[in-house]
Image 1: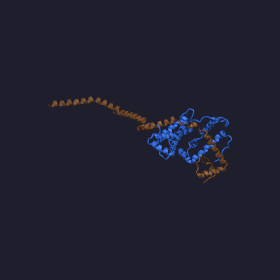
Image 2: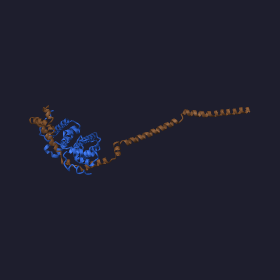
Image 3: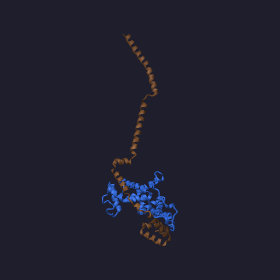
Length: 159
Length: 210
């Protein structure tokens, strides 16, 4: 085991805190007895501990009963939450997300309906064509009438 | 709700408080509020003292301590009796303190009135230590502890004030026992360097060679 001055000095705090193995403890103890620098460092650690002890006041030992009761009330209310409550608490962004999704789907449906209606409406060129057909129709009708008249005439002649 | 007599920590001194904590926690895991209340009764004050020492403000400490127990209760289903309950609670507390300190530092939280910052006590005064009364000396010590970096302050508070063993501190802070040992030594050396001139002007500076 490496037990030079530096190794031992690094263990002075643990020695003071009783955190060394019995073997290490004995090594550090022997070293401190013979090493002036380590003895001084140990005294410094003791001084720090005594200064820190000044801050342990009676006021800090006061237990806030109200705070403890609040902590218990929090736990109780946690326990009384239903499984559904807990689900929504854990997924608190779920409801807004579902709402936003519903709005998006509605907007999409409206947009698709508009597109479908637009595609059903006749193309402007088709409209022109239809109007032309309408113009041609009387001539067709006239020609049909002419045919009818001709066939009537043929029948008369045959008779 | 009051804990049943067999749960009360003061009713009969337990032979092994850690084992008793685990039993209570396992019962709390099943929804036993009385067992959880026994845990709150035993650990609320130490947790609050730890948070108060870390942040320097009583009201914030009480709020955060309540949060520690709420989080512990919410996470009770995930508790496994491999770690001491106190160590588990300290881990939650350390994380809450760090988050709170980070929010204060980034301005996402305003410092609580009269706290969350170390009190401006006699460090600025150039008076001899003999003229400082005990409260002023304690204020100086608190201020210097608060000025330590987190990596030094956390193990120092857990060790000196909360009485945790190095192994437990390592578990809470997620580091090795050796790291705890070195950090604690450095923290004490730093405190001595800062406090000795004010509290013990005649003291001989310790050897800090490494």
